[in-house]
Amino acid sequence: MWYDEIGLFKPSAVNPENGYRCYNYHQSPILETILLLRELDVSIQEIQDFMQNRSAGSLKNLLEDKIAELDLRITHLQAVRSTLCSHHRNMSTLLTMDLSEISIIEREARCLVTVPIDRETTFEEEVELITAETEKYRLG
Image (cartoon, rainbow, N blue to C red; front, side, top):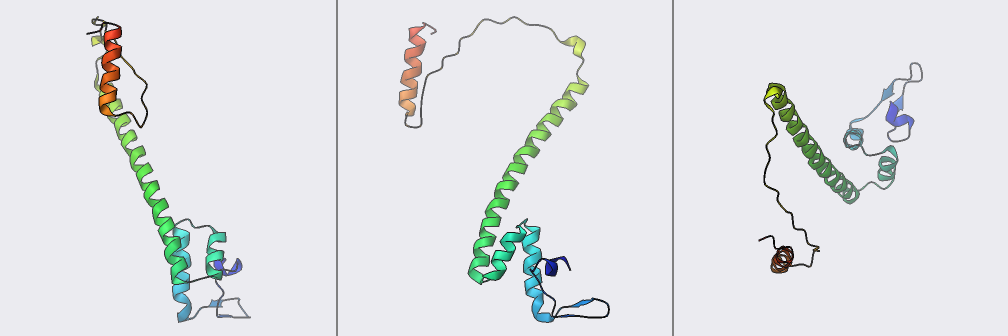
């Protein structure tokens, strides 16, 4: 009912006594397309635009765009899931630790060398820059 109220899908007939909407067999593919697009979070405006200029090519393009968006969302959600799993493992480990066993251990001081690089810097140039910076401070 909702789709015909916003002009996406009109019934083939409406019973004047009870308002019951009747749809014919030929409308089934249109309804399936609308329901699929809504499932893909296609906006009502996008569906209306598609329905006004409906073609196999435009549906193919719209579905390709939505598949690409879905792939990005899946990748993002997988990364979020991985982070959550890592935090969950850390919390599980933390809950099993005896915090009274934590102690401070002194280590020999170490130095970190950083050098400015960009996308055009080759690996060999990076090594030369790091070597020069290391020698400059006699880090060995």
